[in-house]
Image (cartoon, rainbow, N blue to C red; front, side):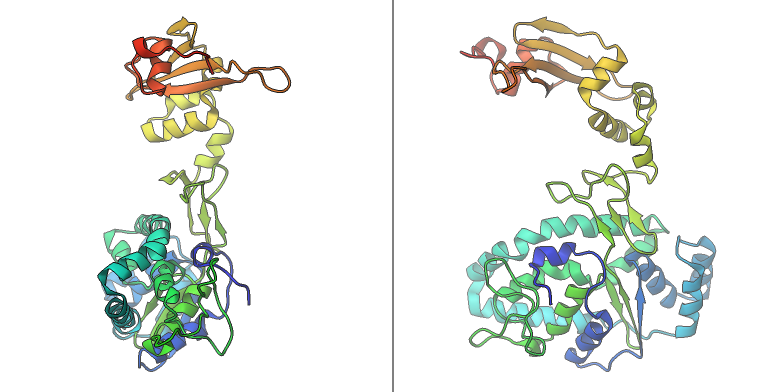
Amino acid sequence: MQTLTWEQAARATGAGGDPEAAVRQAYREAGLSEPEQVLVLASPAAGAVAAFWLTGDASRRKALEEAGSGVPEALFATLRELGEPGRSVRDAVRTVPWERARAAAYAELGPVGWAALWDQTGGRLWPQVDQLVTALRRGIGELGDEALRQVTLDAVLGQHDAPWLSAFDRLGTLGPLNGQAGLGTPEGHGGLGASDGPGGLGASDGLGGLRRVAESAGWWWPYERVAIVTERPVELHLDDLGRLHRADGPAMAYADGFALHAWHGMPVPAEFGAAMRDLTPERIRAEDNAELRRVMLEHFGYDRYLAESGAQPLHRDETGTLWRIELPDDEPITMVEVVNSTPEPDGTRRTYFLRVPPWVQRAREGVAWTFGVAEEDYRPERET
């Protein structure tokens, strides 16, 4: 079995393990009968539509089918064959085991120890995962109305439960699966297959199945008779800060075609990537959405935009050249062009464009601002 860190588990793509078996284990550990049927779907969007349809009345089901929501028509035929799913058992499967394990850990460690544990584990991972969860909920909501987005709040998050599972895993509360190791942590504190520590809580606390789902699947919805479990994405592209980001295609994509497009975390239209390949200054100026226009400028390059748009410098002095890009219905972009005084190994000198506030009127004033000093106090011994 491949060894992964919890961070890698949260970002994993493609098929992994046996999600149906993992879901059934989670039911058993919660003291429930296994679901009669486990429906495996390709994306959280399809899962949300299925949960919305199964728990709705006839009018809601009809409205959802007529709207389409971007899911295959065959899904509705499958849902009609399933019958009633029964009540949600999310509390029994996920909430109760979590609360029990947290209470035991809190009692053992105390408030200070618990806070320190969370800071070292889930507290580090959650900000990254939260961005993915928020983006997914937004994207699913755009397929229908607010009610469809609300259904996502009833999901167990699978791989995106990695932050809180990692905290209990560090304590050794996730028992071994059939004696085999599972996910691990880079510091050797144990992973999804960590054995119980001295006096540990053990798999009897109902976390073993949840761990296995986190290792193998995405979001899932547990009901008495039916469990809906969804697969992980087939593609995931992030920037250096862990935000969804891709210029030439979807930043997150699933096997059924559901996808999220983003630029450094900002949602963009699906056709935006194609538009980025054929950008011109005229196309940038014609974009009505100010945020998208800024993205276009960033991708196109400020220096290239200045050169191809015929922009005129606002001010020049010994420190550099001040440029301003006027944008419709937005504040201007003001930049100082400076040349590195230290030559490169080949003898050339690199040119840099420094973004400065729009109120800057002189090049020296702008360069001084980048160093956090007033213009009159900017007296470098050597320009760089």
